[in-house]
Length: 404
Ligand code: NAI
Image 1 (cartoon, protein in one colour):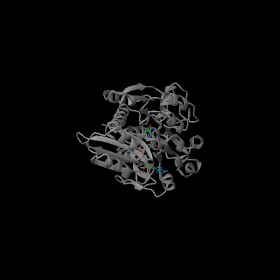
Image 2: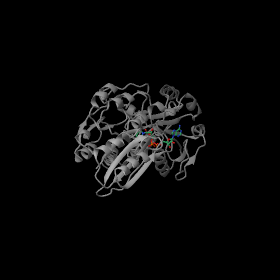
Image 3: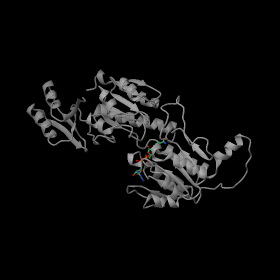
Image 4: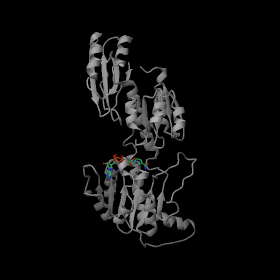
């Protein structure tokens, strides 16, 4: 049951106000902050908080999770979740939700706009013109039509970019480590090397798994064509920045757009430094691929609604770390939520306790993943405190809650 002990929400990193409204409408008390917090600051601020909302800057470490005394849910108001120790969250019965596709379109539009700007050398020309230099020339300015776009990572963003870019006349090549549905006339490359060798524009849209650190380094730039346009709007650590800079300076890379960096400021007050600054035909943007009004609103609503559904109904659909589970609401029933280590026999133990208290089960569902088991049980009659204690005491229990 959600009592006043579980009513505090902390939203960091300037999350769209629609998130606060959704929680406030459900009588939660919401505290918001514009920037992220360091580990120590967060350990302090997280006291008494049941729902924590973050974006990509705040790291949720073991220390943070151990400091949390009331935490039930974390909302990652972004796509990536590798800033969160998910295993530790699962082990402590904390559910994590993200917004896997609420800002896909925004990233795609930025990437596509940048491809055109870079191929036409627009930034360079505009920069010169601001300084008074009128350089009216077609030299090394191209249309995108007919050019080969190499998309590395054909997930939500990569595949949508494929559709958009093909519509405007580009030839699409992609490489993904998983099997993917090929959209339109896109062509799948068997290896990353094949893609790098053929593309006029290489754009990176892989996810943030740790193996992707320095996925693109000197060896990969060596494989690209002379004058390739290069974009990274995925994760900063995926590209070796020193190698990218070297290749921009040599002209091998004729233009680049980078939206994500290995080290990014925590907030708007912190200064940004990068070797990519002040290079010609390089667009650098402060991690704004997904930062449109539309996307922020979509994310705020998507994640907050998922968390509210979890808090009041136990639903875990599209959770990042919990088994995906939902049961229809049964009128005049009580709903019990049991989160446990994934070891055999726990469901039997719960049901034995219910049976020995003559409690009839009207609905029940168990689902497990590699770390935890999650059971929703609906029962049709009053229960007593002792029964609750018995269920809580089942060895392997991580968390037990009565929802209604
Ligand atoms: P997704 O998970 O739908 O797609 C990622 C794809 O990359 C998957 O198909 C996966 O199989 C593939 N992949 C992973 N490692 C690979 C490798 N080494 N080689 C080839 N393919 C590989 O993710 P989504 O939604 O498309 O996002 C892509 C990236 O964009 C993520 O890193 C995400 O964090 C980032 N992003 C950046 C934003 C920004 O503001 N710049 C906003 C939103 C997302």
